[in-house]
Each structure stands twice: as structure tokens, then as C-alpha cells.
Length: 518
Ligand code: BG6
Image 1 (tube, rainbow, N blue to C red):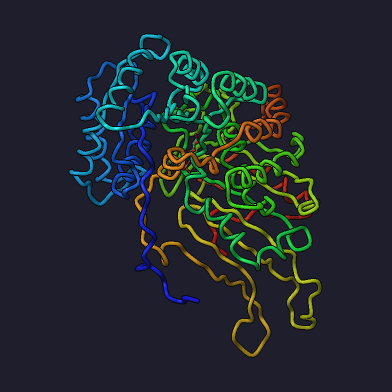
Image 2 (cartoon, helix red, strand yellow; image 1 turned 180 degrees about the vertical axis):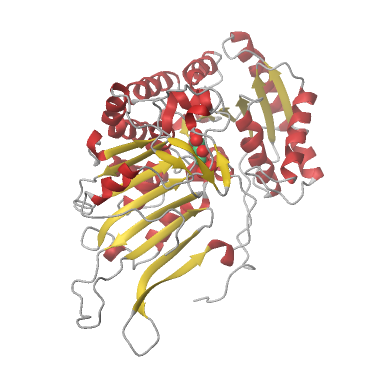
């Protein structure tokens, strides 16, 4: 076994995806320039983008190909100054230009058939000029109200037809995938009318995060987790996604959405299913996704009494003053929309019966901090009679997702000295100590996987519907009752007192302080 950090370890050579074109609907939008195109650049530098590749951007904005390319180039250069998810040390001009040389912009209205006719011509040209072999990945980086209509128009223009397997046509659908159980079902039905389930790739960018993917790898590549991974040894699980940012410029979107819809049935449930899933029978997409779906199916819908909502007031985040949510741009002064949510979930399986899973997420909190913390059951009996040690601290196994990625185990030792005094310590593994940083905005693996037809990291229709079903009673209850106490947590704090009460009333438990390592 290696005991040295493997920063120099060679990884198997990358295998580029097969020939294809990629069409981005929403080419002039933020997501495209901040994440999707930087991800394509990283795939190019990593040798994972095929040589036979063409990129077509579609949007209503009045741009030429040159103008779109210039915008993208400006954006790439602005990343060098820092601040975005993409933080390159330099941009390789040859690589970047090689990507631009295969790029075309199509100005078009998503609602007009003419747009799709022109797109068909461009795709044929791409096949001839760049050898894309007729394979196409459509990326819907657009407002969710367009998902169904655009898919329908793609199909109506014969662009979704896979010609009996001679070529592939796949569609990446961004979030939000519906806004409740009814709309999610309707969207699935709309898409499935014109596409096959195998052509639909419902993206959740949390699954593009390296540490999220590694949860399953760590669990199933090591024997020592399995014996303790159950109700006999685990007291409860806490999943935290705390953000320091507020709603930024997204007030209008957020007023329609709120923290529960924005984060829980998608991102937090992904973390939950990876933690709670049964071992799959193999590592193929269906095996993994079915086991994750099983977890969601086994979670009863949450009773509103097991949910807490919060909204930030003014405060200080990382030393800087922040305004209250209801003073944010495009937000109503008396907005009832939650920016924080805490839930208690149960999983009705033999493995997890009686083990609560507590989930919380919020904006404008004290620290940017995402972790899955598993509290193990305490020692069966304290043997420290007469030592003054009244209570034993808890043992925690923590998967740290962001900002520092790693795994830690927290336990107690005897403090050196003549008297018996215990101290909590932790032993940790940090990704950055073992592996060189990879340029990654989180979309690379997802786009690559879609190109190679691997749906493991994408959500299936039943997973999406089950997720909405679980939170639906809370959505309904919150829509019908205006919260009386908003704002109920200060910006820069760890959330509302009611969330602490949720755990305290449930076996005297407490949240881990956000960002506290031990
Ligand atoms: C998005 C939400 O899906 O995820 C945002 O809409 C949130 O509100 C973001 O800030 C968090 O993602 P990340 O990768 O920054 O942790």
C-alpha cells in the first residue's frame, strides 16, 4: 500500500469521446459562458473532446459567430483575473482557437420552426466539415418553460431521430426540472412524447463535483464502511450545504423558487442518495441509478412539522455587511420566500429505519460549507468512572464536499498527562494533499459522460418525480401559510433558532457548527 501522497502518480491516458456536434440553446446566457464553454475548453486541453467536433450556439441575441466568439474569449480572459468557478492560470491560445474554429452562432427564436430548419442545415454542414458523424448533443441552457417546447421542436424538425442507432441524439436538460410533483410529471411526459428516456440527460451539477462522485467510490471500494453503515452503528446523518452568497442578481428567479425548490429535491437529495444507497450489483448506469432511486422511493413524504424555513435579515458575512433578503433587487419587501430550509427525513428500509437524516441549506450563512456528517453511535457504556469525565463526545465521519474536499474521522483520545482527560481529535484525508488540482468547473465529466452515453450521473424520470413527491407536503403547507417571523436569521449566522429546535426536540441532538472541523 502506498503511504506517500501520489501527486506524481500517472493516470491512464484520456480517451476522447466519439465524433459529435454540440448545440447549446441559450448560447448568450450566463451558464454557457461561465460554465459550459469553460468546461469544453478544459475537455479540449484534457484531450477528451473529439477532434471531430463542432459547437453551435443558438440564441435570440443579435450576434454573429465572430461576435459570439469574441464574447466568449473576453469571458475566458476575465477568468484569469479570478472570481469565477473557472480559475485558470493561463489560457492556451492554440487550444482555445482550435475550439473557436469549430464554433458557429445561429441567431434564432426558440419558438420558430425556421430556427430548427437552419439548425438542421448547420448540423449537416458540421457533419461534412468536421466529421461529426451525425451525432448531436443538445444542451438546453435555457429557462425551464422552454424545455418542453424546444424538445418538441427539435423532434418535429427530425433532429432527434437516431435513425435506428446509426447516430445518436441526446438532450441535456438543466434544472429546475419542474417546480413541484405535478409539473415534473408533466415535463417528463412532454419530453417522453418526443424523446426516448435514453436520450434525456437530466443534469444536476452537484454530481459533477469530484467529491460527490467519490462518495460511492469510497463507500464501495473499502470494506470497512459496510459493517458500520446501518442503524446499528449510525445515530443520524447531517447534510449541510451552506452558502455565503445571497440571491445576487437572481431575485426574480428566487422569488419564484426559494431555497427548498432550488436546492433540496436536486442537490441535497443527490448527496443523500449517494450516502444511503445500497451497494449496486455493478458500476453500470442502471445499477447505480436504480439503487439511488430505491432510496428516494423509501423516503416518506416529509410532514410540514419536520421542516423549518428561514429568511436572512441583515448581518455580516465574512466581516462584510450584507443586506436583508427583502432588500435585495427584484425581491418584494414583504416576501415570504425562504432562503434557508432544514428538514428531517426518514428512510424506511431495514438499513436505515430509525436513523434520521437531517438536511439544511441556506444562503448568506457564516461560511461556504458543504458536508455530509455521519454521527456514529456512542460507546455502549462509559468506563471512565471517577475520572470526572461525565460525557463522551461523539464520533463523526465527515465527507467534506466544499470548499476543501476530503474525509475526516473524529474521535477521542487521552490528552497526554497524569490525569485522564479526553480530547476530541480528527484524522483527515484532503484531496489537495494527494492529487494535483484538475482544472474543473464541474461540468466537464457531465458533458463528457453524455457524449459517451453514460447516464450514471444523470437523473432518471422516476428519481425526479420521487424527489418532488417527498417535499410536496412542505411546499403546499408553506404556500398556504405566510411565515410570521421573517427574517428569522441574521446574515452570516448558522440559520434560524427553529432549526436548532428541530434537532433538539428530536433526541436532544444539535447541528454541527457550520465550518467547524471538529
Ligand atoms: C444552483 C442554485 O443550482 O446551485 C444556486 O440555483 C446555488 O442558488 C448553486 O447557489 C450552488 O452550487 P455551487 O456549485 O456553487 O455549490
